[in-house]
Length: 464
Image 1 (tube, rainbow, N blue to C red):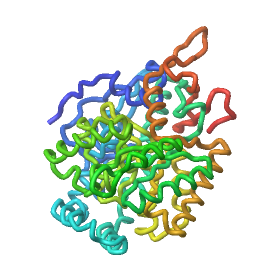
Image 2: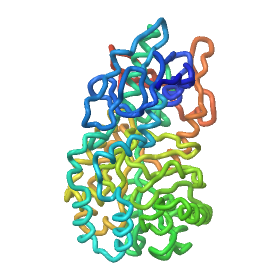
Image 3: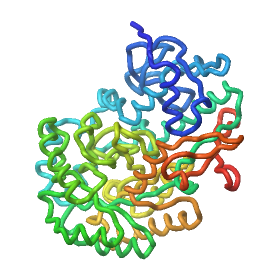
Image 4: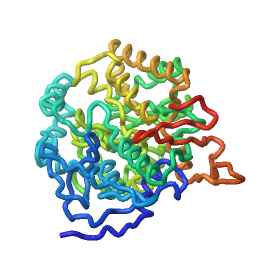
């Protein structure tokens, strides 16, 4: 059974126009035919995995099956790029992890079982870190065998965007298009550092952690659990803000059950929204990075930070497959693009920053978003604190070399919303940027080199 996907040319290309903030007439796209009703995995070329519907043939329900390569059905008709799939649908499916249920059918993780998960989180408050570590290692065993999302950083969305842009430019017969650069003031990448405060001991260590951050000239955000875990004195929150750091809300009571039941979620979210106002917070993160994007509309938050780029070391299977922020309705998602400190120290048993450096390099290749989680609770030990200082030293070296900027999450949220509303306007043969915050924006150029895309910033030094 087939059906006509009736979005038309404009909406198919919108996902690229919105990401690059390039002129709408730079890209023309259209489907080659009808999309089948079946949704599953396929690929575009050898190395870009997609999830959605196609016009080309059968898709796979498992990554273990042979994947249809739809690149053979991509073609240009005049200036229009004809595609056998809808890129907006595929990118949405990746960002929102719509593929994850198919993965679970063929790869049953321990924490995907609701009863097992309920039992674990019911006893978790009484377990030491050492005991939890052994349970989690067992639950996460064979994580290295997971091929998708790609470890240690998945850039599928960016790879797909760049492939499609190159193909659309080739169809148009152009080698260069202008766009609004991803980050303010021409910064090459952007970094945030966040601290999830899980216990009273962690809360009491926040001042010392702020001292460490200030010694490197870095500001960060603290995600606070409002109920049951520890007292949250008003003076504690005021001190964080007074020192130039940011306060956000982390879950309600961090018991792992926030998204277990819709009715219970709606009850809890009323309290969460009250704490958002009381704490003067803009952002939210769920405990243990659990999330359900279908329920986000009940959250009265400006941005969320609960979706990992790759979820292999997290209890919830999946990953958003992107190293950039993206919108879910009117909530901006700031994905977690780096391995958490807890996972590095207690699951991988690694106290070096080599994995973090590798992840940073992969993110920087796409000019993306570096998002770090360091728990005050796990940074108390001398060995962990030393590792964190090494990470800060490395990040500030990148900052001082002009390779990244380190911002508060609320500032990234403000920028990404402003950039969404900016537009390029051509006047007297020259491009300029219109919109609030345009003084921080920079015009950049995407250049096609065969099937590859490179970037340069106007007034900058060469290609990035």
